[in-house]
Image (tube, rainbow over the protein chains, first blue to last red):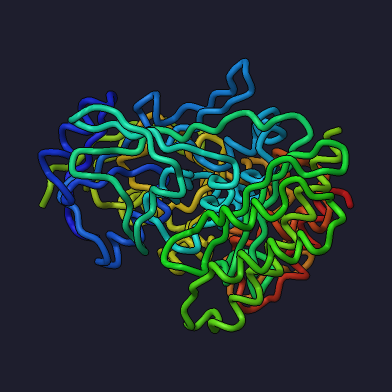
Amino acid sequence: MQNFEYLKPTTIEQAVAVLYREGDQAKPLSGGTDLIVQLREGRRSAKFVLDVKKIPELSQLTLNADGSVVIGAATPCHQIYGNAAIAAALPGLMDSCTLIGGTAIQGRASLGGNLCTASPAGDSIPSLIAHHAVCVIAGTGGWREVPVEAFCTAPGRNCLQRGEMLVSIKLPAMPAHSGGAYLRFIPRNEMDIAVASAGVTVTLDGDTITAARVAIGAVAPTPLLIDVAGAALVGRSIGDQDAIEACVAAAKAAAKPITDMRGTVEQRVHLVGVMVKRALAKAIERAQAKG
Amino acid sequence: MSKKIQVSTTINGEPTDFLCEPNQSLLEVLRDGLNMTGSKEGCNNGNCGACSVLMDGRLVNSCLVLGAECEGAAITTIEGIATKDGLHPLQQKFLEHAALQCGICTPGFIVAAKALLDKNPHPTEHEVRYWLAGNLCRCTGYDKIIRAVLDVAGA
C-alpha cells in the first residue's frame, strides 16, 4: 500500500483543519471497507489518513426523546442494527444495514462512508433518502446541513468542499402508522452490488396513504428521490392499482441507467419498477403491522 | 519510509505491543510482524473472509483494518481458538465432517463461526448461511462447513 501518515484527531476542529490544509491528500477513515481497498489498489491517493472514529460526534448513535435519530458518520452498520429501538424506528434503513457486504464488512462499514464513496449503487442511500435523512457537515467555515438526496453529485463524488467533513446523519421520527423498506436486485442471494434498488417509506391513515417517499438506486449517476412517484400515491388507497402503477411508471421514467457488466439499460429500467412495487408493498405491510 | 507507530493490544488474551508502518494492515502485522500465519491472505480486499479475526469481539476482515487502528483493542485470531486442553468444538467438527480440503479458508470460517455461536448458540441453517456469506471456499463446497457448524450448535 502507498505510504501515508496516520492521524487520529479527537475533535472535529482538528480534523477539518487538516482536511483544509491538505485538500484531497487528506482522507477521513471510518470503517475502511472502501478507502483501504482504494488506497491499496492505487485508485485513490493520500498523504494523510485521518482515523475519525475517536471523534465522539462521528461515532454516536442517538435515539432522541422525540423519536428522531442521529447516526455518526463513522458508526458501523452492526451497531446500528444491533440497537433494537433504532432498528424498529427505521425499518427501511435496517434493510440496508443488514445487507451491505457480509458480517465482517458490517462490523466496520459506516453510513458516512457509504455516502462519501457516493456509488450510484450505494445500498444505504435510497433508504436514507426515503427516511428524510439530512447530512450534517462541519467545515473550517462553519456548519451546514444537506438533504441526503443532494449529497452525492456524480459517481464517486459528493458535495463536500475543501475543509469539510460529514459528521452525522439526522433522521426525523417516522409518524404513527408508517413503514419503510429497501430492496435491491442482485443475481445471487448475498454479497453483491445492486443492479437496481428502491427505498420506500409510507404513512397510512386507515387504508389511505397520506405520505410516501420513493428513492431509487443503481439506475442513474447518483441515487435519486422521485417526488412524482411518491405524489402518485398520496390520498389513494393502499389497494389502488392505478396509483401503484403510476408510482412505478414515474420511477421507471426517472431512471437513466447505463449498460454494464451487471445489467442492460432495459433490464435495469424494468427491475427498478419491480423493486419499487415490492418495496412499496413491504413498507405498507410494515406500516399496518405497527398499527 | 514513514515513522513507525507503536501499538498496544491484547492478542488472544496476551498483552502484545508491536511497531507498524501507518500503511500496514492488521493482517500484515499478524503474519509478517508477529509470525502468526494462521490468518490467511486471500483477496486482500474484503471479499473472501480468509483473514477474519475478532476485534473487540466483533468479526472483521483483518486486511481492511490498519494495524495502527488496533491501539487498545482485543484481537482474537485462529491461534487463540483452541485451548490448552484441546481443539475448539468447531475445529473438532470441521475435522469430523471433512469440512475442508485445501484449508486456506478454514481459519476464517472457524473464527467467523465462533463469532456467530458466541452471539447466537443455536442458529438456524439460514442464519448460519447468511452469517458466513462473507467467507468464500473454492473447493469443499459449503454444505459440509454448514453441517459442521450446525453440529456444534446441536441442531
